[in-house]
Image (cartoon, rainbow, N blue to C red; front, side, top):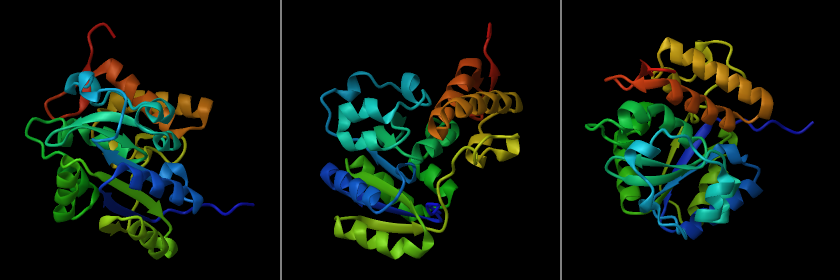
Length: 255
């Protein structure tokens, strides 16, 4: 029976060039890191499509993340190796491509911390997750400058190995957290208590029920947590609007 991959820590690092990110993702996968434990963010992925032409804050943020295959064809084949790839608008940073479990954190926090007109962008999201504010500010600044942030979730007893791997690939501003990024539910959601705090905090009780029903239905069909999460958020957005506190609670008329 194959050994279960037990992620316990998250290593974050900045890379200056897309080809470095491509190389690191392939090396992490070769070392046995599952694709759903690797996250990437960046705004300057090379693409044949002019991103700015179709991204708006209203239409894109919380609009549901696309599959890796679609964005892999636009931004490079390595993105197709990851899960939950999409584009979001981040205040102070602009439109970014996000892939992997970081996309779940952004979807859950986007209402207040990201989308709010007075929000502090990624700094708020990262510090709410537990990252030191000074490091979060550095990451936001480096993303603003067009560089790339990579986060990988690794077993505690292999953290040193993966730190060396990232350093050898040109990583800068390395940081290690003794926690992993939140996934919406550990398998099927049996109750609102199973939802991660990042998700639950932005849903009313009725919206939580809608989220859980859709999440479980798609998970049962596909066994894919990321597809289930995308579908669950889309179901919420179809039936609710946000209130002044960034909580999806206002039932849409005629729905």
